[in-house]
Amino acid sequence: MLGSEKIFSLGSMGAGVWRMLSIAVSILHSKNGYLFIDEIDSGLHCTVLEKMWKMVIETAKRLNVQVFATTHSYDCIEALAYYCMRKENKVTDDDVALHRIDREDGKSVYYNVERIKMAVENRIEVR
Image (cartoon, rainbow, N blue to C red; front, side, top):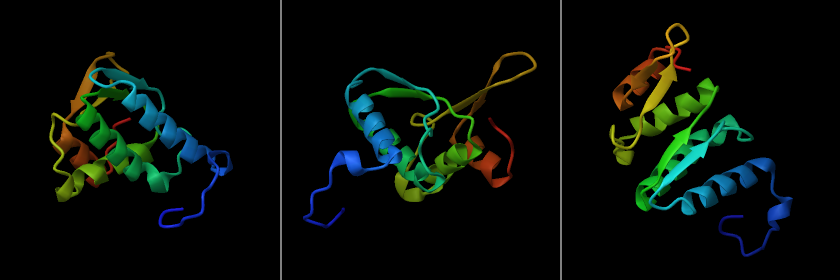
């Protein structure tokens, strides 16, 4: 536990801890490259999704990794928007983009940071 001198076995942690560790290690191994993560929020509770995005975005920027992540979760997209809304994070369109495949014509619909924020503020479906 943070601030504790007691050591905890990683095996005693839940699936969410394993998932976050897996994502972090995958980004580390992808330095100066690309990383594809299917269902990035899988195994994570909705309350940690914003922290997950913080770790992913900041680590990827630091290590020059372009991350492609999929999700079917509105909570996951909402957490991304909330992370982007925080002024201290200074997220730009170079850092984050969302693409949704249109079911009608199969084309990509692009959302920059402002459109992601606007979609979540207005509860617009972007999945």
